[in-house]
Each structure stands twice: as C-alpha cells, then as structure tokens.
Image (cartoon, rainbow, N blue to C red; front, side, top):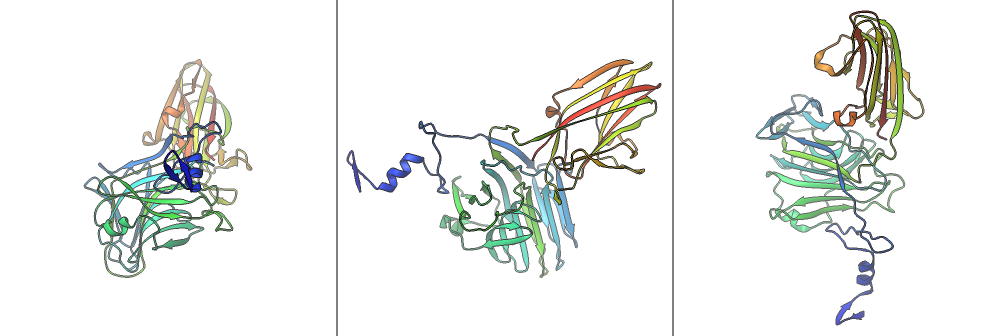
Length: 400
C-alpha cells in the first residue's frame, strides 16, 4: 500500500492511473508517451432503419418453409412460420469492413416475441453464414457466441453485469451493442442498455492467449438477424427497429487497392456495350467480401453528331461473355467486352452526354456512391445518331 496525499492507493491503482482509464467493459484507454489521450472517431459503415419498408437495394432476405421478412410498426419483422424447419433471415449486403488495429462495432435493437423456444436459434449481431459474433436464443438459453467456418461456439454463462439477467425482458424492444477488435483474437464485448439508458456489459469474450487460430476466418461482417428452426410448431417472431455499424478510425483508405481500366470503340451508332465490369463472388478461392467503389470516370468522343455514354448496374449479361481478370493476384474485378445486354432505365446509374468532339471527367464519384458488391456488375454503353468513336476510362478502389 502506498500513501499519497492522505489517500491510500495500491500499486495496481498507480499502474492503472499511469496507462489510462477503464470503461464498463474493463477496456483501457491509451495515452501517448507524452501523456496525450489517444482517440479515434467512429466512422459509419452501415445504417438501416425500417420506418417505411425493407430496402431491397441494401438488404437481402432469405426465407424457407413459410418463413417471412416483413415490415410493421417501424420495425423489420422476421417470422419462422409454424413449420418444423421454418427459417427467415435479414442481412445487410454491405459488410462492416475490418481495419487492423481499429475497433468494429454494431448497435441494434431486438425483441423476441416468444422468448427462447426449444428447437430454434434466434440470433442477431454481426455475422453471416460462415463467420461473426451474435447474441440471442439457442433453444431456451440466452447466449452470446461467435461463428467460425460455419461452426458456432456459444455460452449461456455470462460474465458481465448480473443486472442484465435480472432485468432483461426479451419480449420488449431492447438496445444492444457488440464491439470487436479482431487482429485475430482480440476480445469481443456484448452490451445491453438498461431502462435508465446506461450501458451494461453482458459478456466479455476473452480470446487472447486462448486460441490456436483467429476467432473468425473473415472479419468483414454484415449486420444480420436470423431465425432457424429444427423442431416444434411455434411460429417464432423477432423484431428490430434500426441498425448502425461502423469502425473507429478517421476514414482513411490505407490498405485499399486501386486499379484503372480503359476501353475504346469506333463507328458506334445504336447503343452497344463498351465494357462490362464484375466484382467476383469468389476471390483467392474464398468467398469474396470486398466492395469495389468507383472514384473517377472520364469519356471522350469524336464524330459528326452528339453521343452519350450510359452506366448501368446489374443488367442481365447475355450472349457469350468472356470474363478476364483485371489482376488475378491482387484484384477482385473482372471485365468483359463480348456480353450483350438489354438496357433498362431502372438499372441506369447515370449518363454522360458528349458533343461531336468533346470530353468529360467526373472526379467526385464518392459522393454519388457508385459501388459493386461481390457478384454485382456494371455495364458501360455508347450510343450516337451517327458513327462515333468513344474512349472511356474508370478508376476504382477495392476495400480490402
């Protein structure tokens, strides 16, 4: 024990004072060598809300054997049906992008209308079919868990604030938070907000120095809610009102991979494909989780009449496409110039009008939110009322 100006402090207190303060999850804050506190901004990656409907552009649904995903009372409603093997899932198409040395987090609300029911899993969190972190019911037990290579490791023995077990009512809409740092085996924290608006630690998943491999195989994770039944006749219902997930960093793009592609065509009249881009579903023999984001586009024309370049997303590409990798080792993108499409204004992202001899460059595409998730395509077409030559170039970044 050490005496300090009339107060007694343990050596452990002095040690903790020297390196920073602790939050409710017993996580330490860090200071620089000169004593300044090290802070990081939260950078939003995913925001979903359900006051109006289920946004099919940003969310995907998977249902089986009568399961449904609907919207009601400003919430998404996930229903299993009474079938023994009923199932329903709602998931963001965008993945929370992992950044080494920075914390990923997810806020969400959830209620379980029937609480825990035998023969069913009712989970919500940051996870997909193969990887992630989640909380909810495994049968009648409330659990927290992680998933690696489609194998779940769960526990109902919670090591956090006992007030959660005492006060938590699953049939009411509750607010939760999951935080993770990964780096392979960083701890994972699960939180619940009590009726006074105070965060309570549910459980700390203590992973450092315990595993022989990473806690998940791929830490790029969507927000997901999922009900899967294996028995019973109860129609299970989960509801959720909104989601927010992000990463604590300053929004830098270090680690991104950038590529540029250029294509030209001559004597164009009727609308034809100049080039198709596709974000591959599989990269390096693994399920691809990387998003491609357009940064810059430019087009030039030469002819006797005006022309137009059009950019479409996710048109059906027919004919006999011949896809080739942009960079087999380093890029998730591939291109094709042989495939054909039927243009549709419903898929049109933008058009670039061009004079007889002119050029246009668009440099702030980040503001227009042009991106491709794995499996999605972009088609660039050219059209003129008379023979025209076109050159089109694009630069994009891949969010590894």
